[in-house]
Every structure is written in C-alpha cells, then in structure tokens.
Amino acid sequence: MRYLCFKYVNISVVLILLFIGGGCEKSDNYKITGMLYGFADNTKVSLTLAATHQDEKKEMETTVQDGKFTFVGKLVEPRYYMLTIEEPTGVRGTYGFMLENSDITFSAVRGEQQEGRPYVELKDVQLKGSVTDQIFREKMAFREKLDQMFVDYREAHAGTIKKISELRKNGDRKVITDFMQTDDYKNLVKAEREAFQTIEKVIHDSVAANGDSFWGPLLLLNNRAYFSSNDTEAKELFNGFSEEAKNSFYGQALKKQIFPKTLKGKSVPEFSLPDRNEKVYSMKELSKGKKCVLIDFWASWCGPCRKSIPFLKKMYQDLVDQGLEIISISIDKSNADWLKALDEEQLPWPCLIDTENVFAEKFDGRAIPMFILVDENGIVVEDNLRDQALKNKIEELIRNK
Image (tube, rainbow, N blue to C red; front, side, top):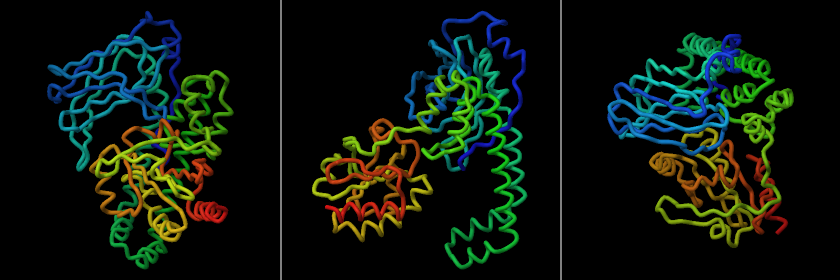
C-alpha cells in the first residue's frame, strides 16, 4: 500500500500564534525527560531523524534506569524524529514526533507485543512541551477518520478477504480465477478502489492546503511509503509549493525523492559485500569477464521483489551462457530473514547482503526492487527497466559486444 491512512483538520489559530513566538520563551536547546512504565532497566532509547525517506543513522542513544531517560541537544529548526525503545530481547516500540528546542516530557506504558513480530505497542503516550508537535498533531488529525474508514472496509468484506487469501495460499490458479469472477470479489475490488481514491484525495488536499511552508512537503513525505521518478502527482504538488516550502529542509528532501539523480552514463559504484558464508565479494570481482551485469536490490519482505524472481531465473537461464551475470543484494536488516528467503528461492547467481548501506549511500536507492544494468566497461546503462523491457536491453547489449 503506497499511502498510509490519515485525516485532515485545520490548525488552530492559538497554536499558530504560540509557534510564531507570542506565547512562551524560546529555548536554545532541547531537553527530553522520559519516563517509561513496564520496560526493564537497560532498555535502549534512541533518537533518529525521520520522514526523509533516507536510511538515517541514530543521532542519540541512552539506556533506561529506574524507568527514566534523558536527551539533551540543539536543533537549527524543528524536525520530525523517531523515538525508538528497544528491549534487550530486540522487541521495540516507536513514536514519531516534532522535536524543537524546548523542555519536553515524554511518558509511555509498555503494551502488548504484536503476535509473531518483534514490536510492542506504546500505550498512554504523553508528550508535552513541543508546540510544533501540537501543530503537527492538528495537521495529521485526518488519520483517525481515514484509519476508521479503512477498518470499516476490511470488516465489511472480511469473508471475501479471508477467502481469497486462503485460495492464494492453496495456489490453484483456476479456482482463484473462478472466484475472481464472483460478485463478492468484484464488490471487494470496487470498495478497495473507492477507499484508496478517498485516501489519496484527502492526503492530496491536505498537502496542497499546507503548500506555503515546510508542512506541505513534510505531510507528503510522512504519508507516502515511497516515491518514484515518474510520480506525476508528487511533482505537481511540489511545483505548486511556495519557494519557502520548496527550499525548506523537507522540501529539499522531497525534491531528492521525486527528481532523483540518475546513475545512467556513470561508472557503477564499487562495493564489497558478504555472501551467506561471510565471504566478501567486490563488484569488480563478480563482473570480470561478463558482457553485462544486472544488480538486483531486493529484500525478503518485499512482495514485488519475490514476484520478479521467476522472471529473473528464466532470463538468467536463457542468457547466462551468453555473458549475463546477476548479483542480488538484499537490504534485509535481519540476517535470518535473508537466509530463509535464500533457502526458499534457491537463486543460482551471487547473493550478497548490504551490510554497508550501499543501496542508499552509493546507489541513492529509494524503493525496491531496483535493477541496475551495467555494461562490460562498468558503465550503468539502465536503472529504471523491468521485466521484458529489461531483458530486451540485456539482449541488445550482448548482441552488440
């Protein structure tokens, strides 16, 4: 799902006046005083810049003692941060908020762990002292209405959703095709389309309504799971922003996503990454003697990535003897998940894991699957092709060598 579910309401005049500077004394630094309930001592708490669609590093980390933690620092301007609470077992909870230079208090109660996942719900969250965060909550208040609309849609069609899920697990294509011709399935598709059209319109209108400041690009960044270079809606919204909004921190972060720099025509970035046996291979080593190399960035949790594998296998089988090499690089954070996927997929080409964050830092990656096609001279010839168009280009490269 490309969009997250949110609902829009107007910001209050009182909060605007406070933010502009009428209501309180401005601090030169921020101090976060936290209190956690139900978490063990030595639980880690960290702060990470968020909503940039980049793989940001932790800026601060501390440990909980007697339920308490403190952060002190300084910002140039208010920014959206993710506070992550991670227990020694690896189970974690997160909370996003607008951080500003002020005295901030935070408290939360440990809720239930999600079934089968290393995440815990944070309950009774209280964050006080950040006026900018109050404004953010007002602007993001459209979440509640759209979240409920999405829940209602799922509940109304729960039987159909369960049925199609069970059929897909069984894998009988004829039975699935027959079911997709029923009125129940057609009604599900219609309801889903209408739900997402509503979500898209509400988010679009909310972003456009805040296009005179950094709030516009921040709302768009915070409500999209990913962007692409041919994202016409995001580009139209960006072009409608004020110059202030475009030149803001979040305006520039958004610009980087929708107007990305291309690698085409440039030398492929060099990298050295480990395989499942922890043996390190370089791009130069794996591409030696090949007419072209396809770098495939993927992850075990990426549905489209896994769906592309049968096509890649067939293409590899057809062209490996003619000079094609494929290098799959997983961006999985969990080594166990990656190894499990490798066992399931049985990929016949070199498979590495991105322990050095080359996807983001060297290839400016934003979404997966991402395919980088490199010729025998180490020059990137394509970075935005898939399926048959990709195979056609590879065959062209092989024929012309």
